[in-house]
Image (cartoon, rainbow over all chains, first blue to last red; front, side):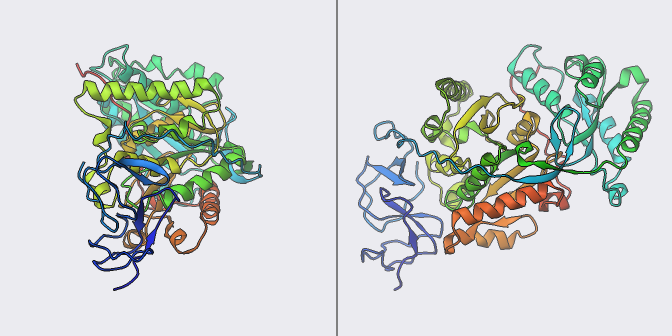
Length: 79
Length: 424
């Protein structure tokens, strides 16, 4: 298992950009293992987000969670 | 994730406008009698209506690119034709769009001279946008022909060839001159965005825009449906309340327009955007607005409306790239910068287009199309440094260096005026 290569773009963000493919079990900076594989360029949750809560990237709201998201889950593109 | 954020929306952060120090920059361009400066020197053949498109192309095809390989004064003869001009409602938004587009192109500083070919009986009457005497007063070289007056297809092609031949001779020996970068009008585009676009190519282009504006130049952001969700960032940059309200007015128009057509603004992003890591229109828009830098928003223009303000401005257009870029050139853009993640192969005439790749994998796979790979910002190159590189390339291409899309000969079929309204 490797360290996940991720980039948090703003201190307020609750998702980070995956700079390289993340495999199940790769660890995030806080030690949490990734629960899903995430493709490069996609987002991974770096804080828990409850259904209805804002998803924040670039310090801005980019959407609302349509299901509870735990840390280290990827975002799936369901609108 | 849903883009329905009405309940969790936060107001835009306090004004984060940066004021880059004024700087001096220059390029080598063609000074025009109108006072504008061209970055290329084309002879243009335009049409008022689809009926004259074949004739216009036949005229331009008589002067193939190879004829100009050893002629530094002329970049070529280009026919930019379109598919409408008749069967339109005389006073409608669609007719106004086409008229502004054609009027803007025949005044474009990248044309040394323009020939407009019409049929004669079309709704888009030549006299409504192309008046030879008026053009002469503005210092433009404009000629018009109608097929019905000339006596048919072949006679018009022959007359057109003669006119273009004269235009080429008149330009023999024309040379570029050193001019200030305040004469650059940069059209900003992005297409086929991905999860990298908002991190690498768009903010890097934003830094280049700040440098251009600091040097007195102009940059145009467009693609109104793709600022949806990020408009607060632009409102916060509006120089005056009137500018903010004009932009709000265009967004309101779009909301009404898409509703009328049974669509919605938040059904973007495209399948390719999603596969590339973009989930909602808000996420896509935030990345898209990053390419506009951080300078104050000076003015908001209609599609193809002549841009007179200097600095950062907005021109209303669809998100459809060739259509948006056409409007920007009609408004006066003499160079374009286009960011892409999935890999756009866009190119334009008469203004050259530079393409900026958001990620290395695509930049390498599509090397023949990409002018700059912006992925080094992920490995320690600062956005400021990448912005300097982009600005430097903009000045070089403005001075005559060919962009990748130019070397591939793109731009003749990318003239796409915004069509709107009933075809009757």
